[in-house]
Image 1: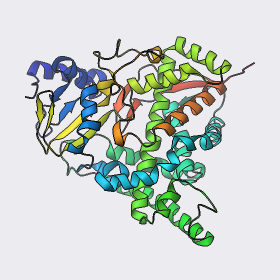
Image 2: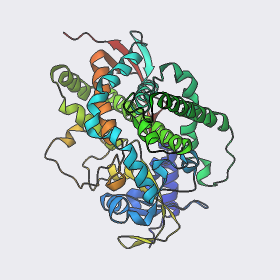
Image 3: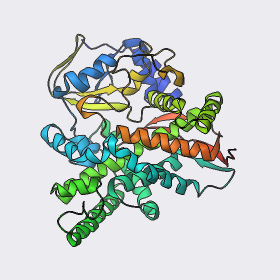
Image 4: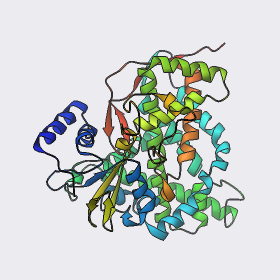
Length: 426
């Protein structure tokens, strides 16, 4: 039986929306008063919402065959047959092809490249300049993902692809299409075509290199994700789908993580000071790992998982009939007071060794067989980039009124504006 939301609770949720400027406000109200299972009571939009460790385990592992990742939504329209939006053997095949370049054993080979691109962005700052770390983090993340996965130096192409990529992210972000799937979507065609042209151009250029060098350029050139896809004899269309999936998912999540980490450090100067001391004196800072984990807990870039229920499901006596849309909330799971003490507080020390929680209480990268394929890559990238930035510059937060925006990822809005000054380390 679905937990009901009273008119009074509905009004409280509406007030929370205006206070937080985000649907996260009303979701927290519903979670607090209704529990870990409820249905959103909006005419024409009545998805079920579940959260908590047990629900996450059920959706991601024990009953994952009862839900479909492929939905009739803009994400599927954009990514088409990308690994993120297909099911069954099709997904498994693409994932097997894409795993080798992202395997943890390959990460050491990316370190110098990650630092080099970070230095290139830093070099454009002037001492005392105010920069938006949401924007600067996106530059770094884009350069890294394009180089690591496609062996492309995108520095000169950033002006060409920047707006199209932002429009693609906006295209798949929550909006009016949630309520009316066929709502007209004006203003996207040109940008989406620009991204396709850019990616198909990369594929075409690589095919020409392969043709010149022999059947496979793995001996003569890059052994990257793009080459793995090409060596599998996939069509240009399917290769484009995987490239766009990894381009969007691979850089937007890192962008959000970097930006939120700087926002939280700026809001907590005592933790920032501790972290600087560690990274200046230790080869590997435990606190940095804890800061990254806590940032991911409070503001998981992928805040919600949307699934289409393909078979009837039951969550501790609460039924979701087949054919319904279901959200499992990573954000609510990460802030569940039944699991996390002072759940809304930034406390990196909660991740100190020895403090245990349910394995599905913390799922910033999902879980089970379809856990994020780039999880290890993203965490290694965050550690390297943050260390480089924090050692080279001091960051002073100049805007404190930051709220979470539910886009394709959970972004800090209106940005994370910080005054950057060069550090002198003795």
